[in-house]
Image 1 (cartoon, one colour):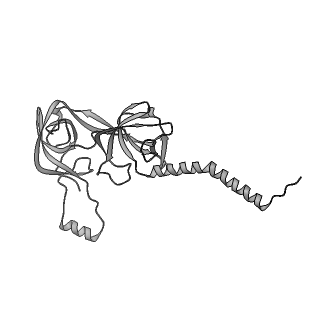
Image 2 (cartoon, rainbow, N blue to C red):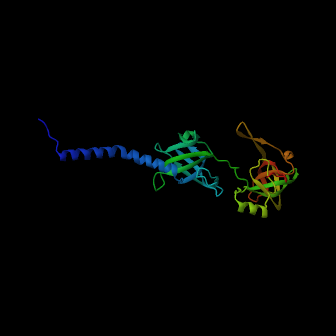
Image 3 (cartoon, one colour):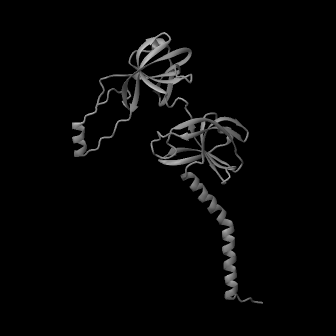
Amino acid sequence: MKITKTPKVNTCLMLLLTFVTAVLFLPWNISHAQSNSTQNSQPDLIGVVKSLSGSKITIYIAKLSSQSDGRGFGRGRIELTSKTQTITVSSKTSIVTRSFQNDQVVEKKLSTKDLKANNILYIWYADSKKKTISKILVQGTYDPYQTPELIGVIKKVESSKITITVATIERPQQRLNTSNNQSQQKTNPQPPQGRFNRGMMNLKLSSQTKTIAISKSTEIVTRSFQNGQMTEKKLTVKDLKANNIVYIWYSDSKKTTAKRIMVMGTYSQNSSK
């Protein structure tokens, strides 16, 4: 017996097909939209890995420094706090790292076994109660010595202490190619007081001097680049010289003794323009 399809039957079939399509593809669309949203949004939490135990990660809570260069949340400097928090990842948590390949951002999936102490983590929650972690982006490794507590130029070296002239670093201002700007530069010249040999930033000396104690545990190093990688070389007090530019980190709250001294080159009054 031949069944004749009526407009009503056709309408029912169309509605059924639309429902099935929605059931199959809507979850994927939502997941895809959430993934894009996560990729382009600020993290809910930033932390540095303190320890790992199975699915639990204990982090030092961190924040982006005001010294961020303004090129996105992945570009700023990290400031660590003393507060810790333990987060729990699940099988649904996406752990990734990003790299640039052929001028494109490529994500690589990781597992908790790939995480290490001092990894910088950008964390997104899946719920408003902030209990479920949806995504973790590994943003490299935290360097506790990325920002010195004191910058100076050595004035005098003794066996257990150094006297420095306190200095600050100023980024060189970009010169605008305009007649007004050129006129201002002629009337208000501001040549740098000095520059370290890397030629990256201007070093401005103050009138303040400070004496820093050096103990047996003080670490003295210098850095250099070899084969595209940064290497550190250990130094002693005898290697320190007058006019050395030094970055200093303290070992005590009173800021009298150095925990770490990094030699950053030699200060010269004769800086090139």
